[in-house]
Picture 1 (cartoon, rainbow, N blue to C red):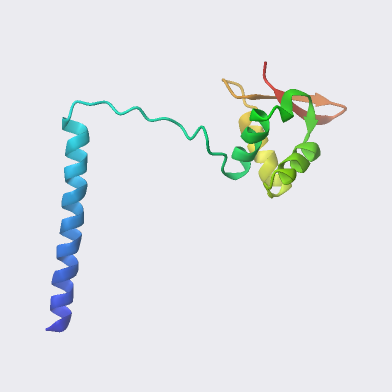
Picture 2 (tube, helix red, strand yellow; picture 1 turned 30 degrees about the horizontal axis):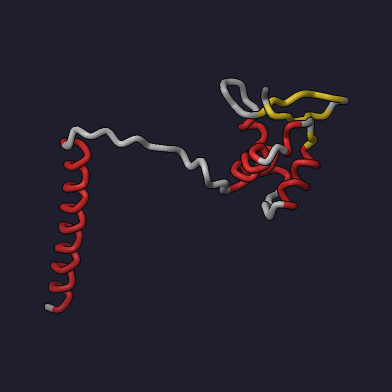
Length: 115
């Protein structure tokens, strides 16, 4: 009997949670108001966020190699592996409005802020 009561209470809690979600969704969908979603401009989280932080501080206004960028990240308390930094740099230097450009100099990639 006690097990059944617990199951009923848990089901009731699940139903209440679903009703709250439905109410929030209905307010958004049927209110006619448009909410503007802003990106996390002020937060620099993760390896990509660390590189965006360096860009915002002007660190990448001149050409930097991967090892220089990793040292810059570590100097600002962003401790990530070289692979994580490389992946973030590759993503931020793709074409199409990305903030960095990657160039080859002496067979090695260097990164600089896109002008």
